[in-house]
Structure formats: C-alpha cells, structure tokens
Length: 159
Length: 241
Image 1: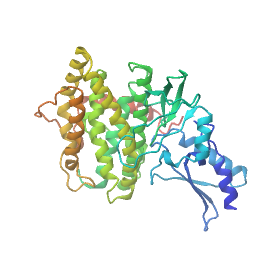
Image 2: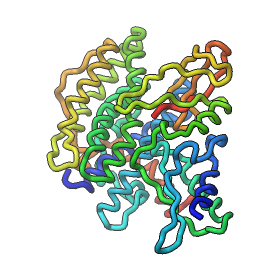
Image 3: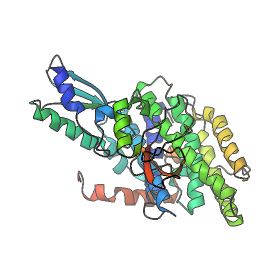
Image 4: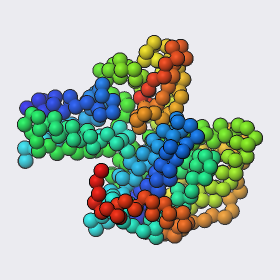
C-alpha cells in the first residue's frame, strides 16, 4: 500500500525542471502512513532554502495523492540532513543531461566552494566549456557555455 | 543579546534586511548575469530569514509567525547589524558589503551546524552551503575590481574603506549565545585578508566602530527600507498572491 502511495508521489515532476521528478532529485525523503490516524505523511527537503518551487511541489504532492484516493496528505518539510546534489539519482542525471542540463560534479564534504573539474557540454560532449555566471535561471543552476559548439547551457551546481 | 530567541531574531533580521537590499538591484545590475546572481543571493538570504524568523517566533511563544515578525515590527524592534541596512551605494559598495557579510555568515553558519540546538544546527548546515557561493561571488568581483583598472581599483578601495567600520559590530562578544560571535573574528579576518591581498587592496585601519543594531538602535536607512518592505502587508493585512 505504502509502495503504491510512494509511486504516486515519486512521479510528481519538479515544477522548474520538468524533465525530472522530485524523487530523481532527492527532494522526496519519505512516504509513510501515520499508524494512529491513517493519514499519508510525505517528507520533503528543499534544494535551496529560498527555493520558490516548494509551495507548488507541496500542492502537486497533495493533488497526486488525492488522485489515488488519499486527499488528506500531510506534507512535511525537513532541513536536516541538508540536501546535496549527490542525492540526485543516476536516472535523474541521465534525464538532466538528455534535456541539455549538465549534471553536477560530486559535492565536496567540506565547506569550501566546490571547484568544478570538467563540466562536459550536454549537447556535443566537449570538455572545453566555461562558466558564464555562477547563478542561473533557478536557484540550483549556473549558466555555462561550450567553447567547441558555442552553445550556452545550464549546469546544476554541486552543493 | 541573550538567549536563543534574540539570537535567532538577530540572524533572521540580518538575512531579511540583506535580502531586501540585494533585491533592490533587480533590473538595475550592471549586466544581465549579475542581475540574476544578486536576485539569487537575495533569495537565499530570504530563505534563511524565513527559517530563522519562524523559529524565533516559536521560541518566543507569543503567537508571532515569520510574517508578523517581518512586517509588523518597527525599526527599533529589529536586531540586524548596521552593515546590512546601509544603502547599496555603487556596485563596489554592494560587493564590499556582500564580501563582509558572507565572510561572517559562512563561519557563523558552519559553527551553528555543530551547536546543541537541533533546529539552529539544521538551518546552519543548510545555509552555510549557500553562503560559500555568496562569498565566492563577492570575492570574484572584489578581485576583479580591485586588481582591474585605476578607476575600478579606486572605487573598490573607497568602498572597502567606507564599509569597514561596520564589520566590528558583527563580532561583539556574547558568551551566552549558541555561537559566540567573537569566536568567528579570526576566520573572518583570514578570509577577508586573502581576498583583499589578491585584489591589491589595503585593509583599513580599525578605528571608528559604529554599533547598536543588536540593541535596536539603527541608522535612518533602516526606517526607509522597512517602510517600503512593510507597506503592502500593513495596508492589506493577510493579503495573499
């Protein structure tokens, strides 16, 4: 039963990067049933503290559960442990790359800003790329361009 | 500053006022990428402010939520440092302010991540990753402007000189706080010195050290900032988008 509920929630797509689900991104932490009340309890965590997509994600989770007959879901937000790009699944990385968004390199454990090794162009595969701006169209992305094929592309920042 | 409520409130106010100031650059930044960067940093600060003020409201236990604390307090009730309320000035002043704020928030949030209060620890662990990006961004610009043209060097040095007196307030000792700000000074000084050296800039002599923000005694700039930030909520209580 909980497996079915989890599948319903896991299929919710990220409202800002619509090629990946919240499960792919590691935003979805748990789907449980409260043994006392029988309510579905969904636990999520934001990528960035100020991520403006969180309200939409909560609403989409409630809608997905209502569609499978559970309209009374309790969606909880946790901040610890802090989200890391290392939680993005391999399937998620492949979907990002296929959509022209370079997936993040592994995050470093210490608090130093991660130095990017080689970000490959998601269009032509060239490692000859450069950062245009550390901040991009959403809180979690940076803007890059490829020096080989000259195309600009988004890169999910390692965090 | 005594107790977790005042501590969470002060940090939340720092982040909230910094967010409001940075957001003033939106549509006015020197280039498109920078416009987006400053808006993103403002959003990070706002995210931290919401978590800290929500928690402060819970600690106080008087029924005030994040909105009540952000929009229904007057200037004398704000506990933010003076640094964040100073006007943006030119782009160099904004980058000097951001460099000093990030060089303070990064070790602060890092220390908070290991403190005994679980909620503050979770907020610190989350926010420090974002602060690292802010510090990196400000450092890049300070180096570029300081070690740039004669004119950019002159304006970056002027900005550092102008803002420097306001950093001392950040490290006023408070042994009772979850993290004593005085313990962060060495880390701050080391980070800032490294950036200023690379930027061929001179660290000003420390002398005048204005303070009072943590006690609610602010510059007049905060009142104007709050008037703009709070007017909608006060004119239309409970309004939603």
